[in-house]
Amino acid sequence: MKAQFVLDASALLSIVLDEGGHERVDRILDHSQIHAVNLAEVVGRLVRSGMPPERAVATIHKLHLEVEEEFGARQAEFCGVLLGTRRDLGLSLGDCVCLTMAATLGAVAVTADRRWKELDGAVVNNETIRVELIR
Image 1: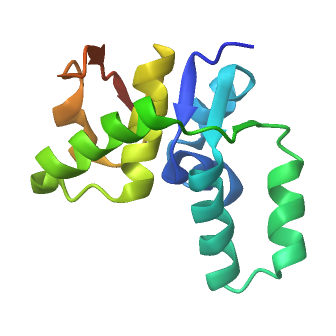
Image 2: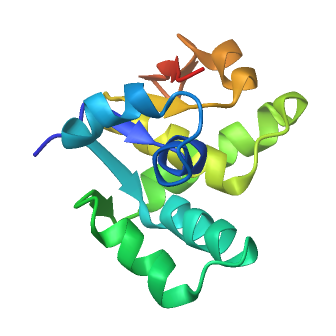
């Protein structure tokens, strides 16, 4: 399946924690992917908040979300450009991985992070970044 949407950690957490915006993510979940790096962020957040690790992993598995595990040189270069040029937005490595994956797939990056909206339509390494806010 070619994903139409790529979820960042905040988008997936909105479902798991029943936060604002989860309705939108629920509607697109079957057409979405997440990168393994962003999945690690979600599991880490759940465990830090007190959820037992086994339960955190089981909770994520129940969603049957497709997880992308690849990250090649082309994506690393794109990601590095974002990290190096948009520090003003406070982007983390995980943020840049999500944005990179979405742009290189021609998909929409889905997030709760309002700062990402400044990137909507930006072209990096001949790829266009598209962003959708869930709240």
